Each structure stands twice: as structure tokens, then as C-alpha cells.
Length: 577
Image (cartoon, rainbow, N blue to C red; front, side, top):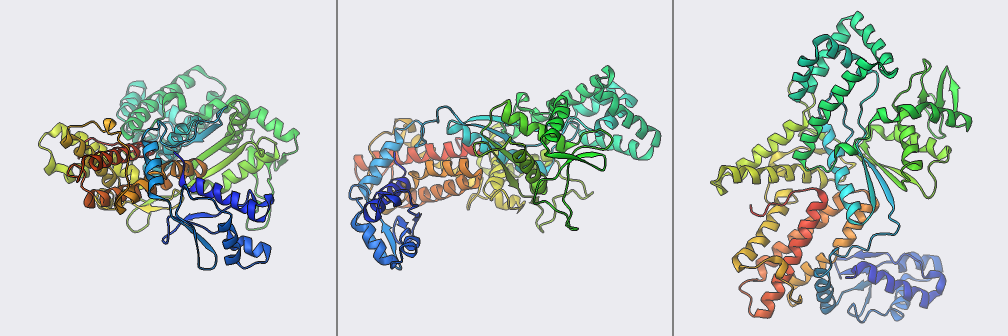
């Protein structure tokens, strides 16, 4: 199956070379969807300016050399120099039939050797519960990983686990004070916030406890056995909690994907020494700092990236520098994607700039910040409980499932089946609401909107797949057996088949931009096209057997693309709704 946009782009490039010389063979044809045709080539406008000729004249010259008779109806020049391209119905039908027979649904074969991509996402912390702020970094990161793996990239999941640092002195000291049994009782229940807050209260109220906590950090980092035992207990119980929550959300992170800060502890001194010897870092007020160019404060002075504190300790900037070096040198990453909140924009920009100064990031090795916006309340404020605390992620999940069960309650008499489908619908709605919005934008949480069966919602897309399955159940057929050649005779059939041909391009866009909402937009448009098709084109009651078989094949292909696309987003697809 060929992507229509790529086919037309290649044909226009050939025409540009033939009309204006081989130097224009690599010009961007500027192919865009159009309301006046299927696609529009807009290259004549910038090229006309470059050549000093009227764009309509340039467009006409391109059309004279444009060979698309096997793909498109005769191209037309409109407006100031747009080239309108309307695909042939038989070409669309042939490509859709070919797509139905492809295992990878139009995706190019994996690169050899596969590009290695590290995706840093979720950002959990030991002895702290995931809250609503973790939702987007977790869901968006997981969708990016799924898409990259679908396209054949070698992907390394890296949940940068906060398991080291000054707060662990406080937590270990508190665990020592209340004893192992009480500690395990609190942690095994998943009430990490209560444990952390109790430790913090002791730290703030008792100077002696605070002094012991600070000393405990030193003994922990020095390898004290009892400190390490308690630290391992905190980490172990936290992992049990994280596994349970990730499984509930359908997140693909495993224990092996945890990328703990403690892993980099032995690398910090060497990283600092390398940066200092290379002249990238210097001593400033007793601390080792990097001053990447372009970062200044309000006073105009350079902003430091503190790599080693004046007391000899290391902070999270040190760990981030060690992590980026390790991912490049040891893992061999070609691309590193940090799925992290917008509050880290300057910090990560400074880390990347310092890594470029050190020669770790090059033209062949890149790092990017996939910025994550906020999930807010209805008024745009941060989502918090009545007491002012951040909303726990598990609370958000449970409420989504409970509300979903209310929405579908009248459809299922079997309690177990109803709850099972409610979990898929509620969690799918929560995840899709996140993934349907540009990741760097904030959005307001609205359960009524996200659980609606109409509009750009997870339940609407899930219902579209369930509706298609019901067609095949009524016909007594398996969708996999609907393999007849696809015909295009009706406008709604044509629109649906053409939309199906855009799946591979939508998936590729997500991989290139790390923006899953592009796939969400595509899937919503596809489901909408199927709804129109379903309403105006009888499937089981078609006029002839050939038309019936064609429409069944078109429906089966739609089901497959929708299910695959939702799977890439990590949205569950129930068989019934």
C-alpha cells in the first residue's frame, strides 16, 4: 500500500525536476489535504517567488510535466497557483484492498540496523504515591514507546525512579523509629503519602530527628548495611505499588524499565571530572558548575547548572548529566525523548546544552524534551482535593471506572461483565482524554465530556469498534475472513477508504514528533467517516453479493485500523459496549 500523500509528492518532485531542472528534484512539493480536492500541491507559490515568475504560470508548467494519470484525475490549477489533485476511485479501492492484506498496515519495514531510542517517562518516586500530575507523563510516554516499537525502532523504556537523595535520610530514620512491622503495614497498603507526611512532620518538628536524618544520608551513601536494608525495603514496597498501578492503567513499564537515580551514583564523580577537565564546568563559589551559553537570570548573570555542591554533595543535575552520558555511550542511543512537565523546560535545555558542549550530543545523537502540560480542574486551577493535596492517580482511575459503570449500567445485567467493560471504558476514557490533546497544552478534567459516547472521546472510538464487531456477529462471520476486493462506488465508501490510507502517515507523524494526539485526531476522523458510511451504505442488506462482500471487507479493515491505533495509544478495546 502506498501513502497517497507520498505518492503525489514524489510525482510532483519529478515534474519539478523536468520543468525547472534537476536542482529542484528535492524541493518540498507542499502537499496538503484540501477542501476543493483530495490534496493540493502549493509549491508553485514559494517557487514562483524564487524564480521571479507568477505562481499560476509556475503551477501550469508543473502540471504540464506532471504524470499522475494512473493515480489521479487530471490536475487543476486554482487560485493564485494551487494544484488540485483528486485521486481516482479505482486507485483508492486498489490501495485499500492492498492495505487489508498487509501485516504492518502500511508501515515501512523496520530500519536495519534499528535506531535506538530511549524514552524517559512517568518519573515515579520511591515512597511517594503517583498523583494526577504523573498521569500525562506516564500515558503520553507509553504511547510514544508503543508507536516507536510498532515501527521497528529499538526502544529503551526508562522510568527515572527517584530513589536517592536527601529525603531518604528522613524516611529511613522514620522507619527505624516506628519499626519494620509498622513501616511495612503502611507501605503495603499503598498509603505512601501518609508515611512520607509523618516522616516530614517529625523532621520539621524535631531538630534532633532532623539532625539524625541528615547524618543518615551520609551513612546511606557510605554503604551502611542497616541503612541500605531499610532503603531496599522502601524501594521494594514502592515497586509493588507501582506495578499494581501500571497494570491497572495498562502501562508497559516493568521492574526492568526502572531507571533509578541510585544506579548513577558511582558515575557522578567521573562525570564531573570529565566536564571539568574539558573546560565545560568550573568552580564557582565552591561548587562545580556548568554555564551553558544563552541562559541568564533577570540580573543578566549566567545561570549555573550545579553539578557538585560546595559541600561535595551531588544533586539531580549531576544525575541527569550522568544519565544522558550513559544513555549515549553505554546504551548507544541515537535519540533520547524526555517526557517531562513544562516546569523542567529550562533545566533540560541546560542539560542538553551542556551535553552538546561536552560532545555527547551531536548531529547524529539528539535529545528532545516532549513537554507535558497540566491536568487542571474546571476553572483551570491545579487539580487538588478539598484539603489542598494533589489528587492521587488511583483515586482518579477509580472515579473514572465508577462513572463509566453508571453510564453503561442499563446495558448489562451481569455485574462482573458490567464492571469489566466499565474498567475498559473508564480507563480508556481517562487515557484518551489525555492523548487527544496536544501534549504541551493543559486541559481541564471533565468526566461527563470524556465519558460521552459522542464527540472526540475514548468511548466513541471504542463504540465504533464494538459496532463493527456486531455487524460480523449478526452475519455469523469472523472479520479476519472478510477478504474480498474493496470497491468504491459511493461517496461515503470513498471517504472511508481514503481515510484508511492515511493510517501509516499518522503513525509516522507520532514517531517523528513524539505527539500522540496526531494519531488520536486521525482515529476520530476515521471513526466519524465510518459512522457516515454505516448510516448511508447498507452492509448486510447491500444490493448485491459483491457490494456486500466489499463493504464487509471495508468494515473489517476499519476495525483493524481502529483497534491497532487504539492499541498504540494504550486504550483498551472491549468486544462489546
